[in-house]
Amino acid sequence: MTTSERMKMAAGEWYSCIDPELEAMRVAARDAVFEHNSMPPRQRGDIGATLRALLGGLGEGARIEAPFHCAYGFNLFLGEGAFLNAGCTILDTAPVKIGRRTLLGPNVQIYCAEHHREAAGRLAGLEIAKSVTIGDNAWIGGSAVILAGVSIGEGAIVGAGAVVTRDVPANATVVGNPARMVTRR
Image 1 (cartoon, rainbow, N blue to C red):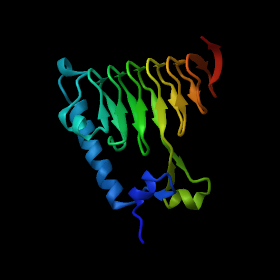
Image 2: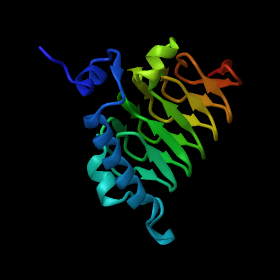
Image 3: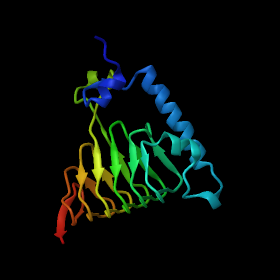
Image 4: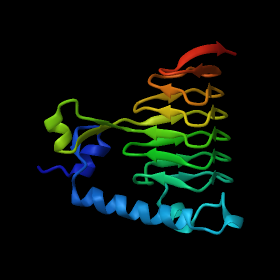
């Protein structure tokens, strides 16, 4: 039985991102993101109709400021009142779940893909997708980077510029590169 690259990606297996079906899906996402980012300033914060239709889930009152970028869109789930500030990039090769009333500062980056460790694997476009989950009422500071497979607990704070390489407990504050816990409420 032949398994498509998209099916491998969804199953969390190694897949090749150099694939016509996946490329077509990325083109659709780029079109939706372009429409969203091109809206007049008075509509900024609203979510363009094409992007709204593409997203995996969108809670009431969720907002995405322009500019914004995502790889696929259908793997992105925003909770009620979630807010993504200008410049956020979400490479959603796996599900990205952002909790209710969670705030992402400007230029936050979330990466679900891990590339192959061997050069030949990278040249073949091999990656593996790992989901990212951010709980309710979390605050992710500007320019923070969240890597594949990370969960950030409810009420947690990620300091500006932090690089989050492992899970963050609920109500903890992490800072630095790699992010380290400085407080837990």
